[in-house]
Length: 101
Length: 101
DNA sequence: TCATTTCGTAAGTCATGGCTTACTTATATA
DNA sequence: TATATAAGTAAGCCATGACTTACGAAATGA
Image 1 (cartoon, each protein chain N blue to C red):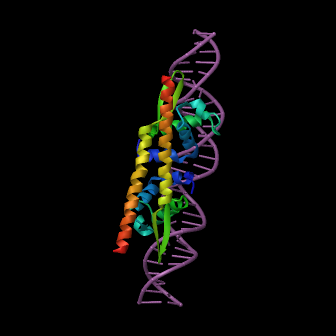
Image 2: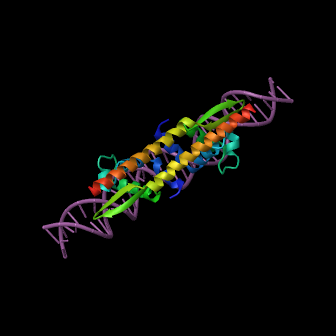
Image 3: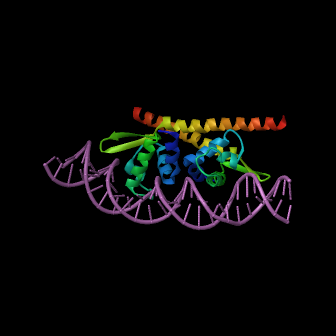
């Protein structure tokens, strides 16, 4: 659930493409695996990593498991880059002022 | 310079901590390596990955190389998560409407 | 209760990546 | 010109991680 885990989870291209499929709505493992160049167990393993990182949620529906984007975790990532942007911009402005001073 | 490279670049914890040091202002390789648990060449290699990904900029200053955050690349990451957030929220709202319909 | 569907887990393989030390290169300075 | 400083590069090691196939577990339905 840490930043660490989220960044690591999004590093793998196939895992990120699984995540991006969920951007358009919840889905089952089988449906996610369909059309992907890797096996269903591989997708299952990726889903576990994404879930442990707090990026997706899992719910049961009969024999299926439905995965969906965890908006809380997603918002953490958004905040990370928002803050990073603000801080970097501040630092840049300060460096300009120091140069002109 | 792709998303691919940016995500991969930010996956490594020590590499991300190098990136985060630059958030507070530009710095040389030696200054960045100081106090880190890895060697200076390791930091140098991380900087190359971050630079190739388009996340940092390099400029020469005599015998030193000064690295700084590339705000263009950073803003790409921010946009990625902003769009992802918007899309995921739309998909969620649509799923609620479909349920209530 | 037996078969089917859907999925997670185990175990093993293979490539990659993050380190290290040793070195080369380039700039500044005495 | 010789020396020192700063940093990139090469080569090699070792752990990790992204896969595969084979198997086990849980819910559904005949």
